[in-house]
Image 1 (spheres, rainbow, N blue to C red):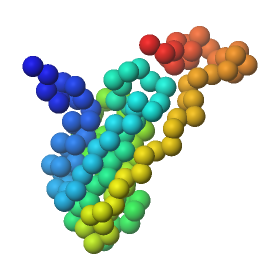
Image 2 (cartoon, rainbow, N blue to C red):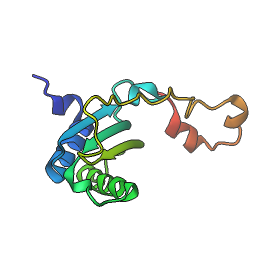
Image 3 (cartoon, rainbow, N blue to C red):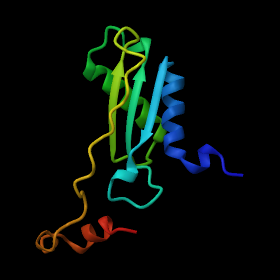
Image 4 (cartoon, rainbow, N blue to C red):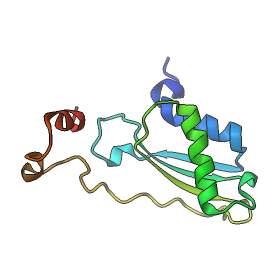
Length: 130
């Protein structure tokens, strides 16, 4: 039997850490990895929409730092390439708000032949599609 944790362990860990530490009144963790030049099923690009009382009296940058710290501690070495954060207080949140999808990837690691000549074999191996 496949559980959500087995299918998406990083997404599940992010959701659990934010729920446990920030007690959100609303939380969305969206895996946008499929929009990027990564292997199928990757968990590398996320968008988080979180509404929490813990953000009261915190600037936007402090909210983002708090979310990043919680996620970093929980993942402890698992790699997340991108984490987009929308962090609001309950007073700022509109229940009808819809999280906008991120723009499509513009290629990322899809190097042109001209660019490849300047890259070492190690770098090319790191970014090779699987």
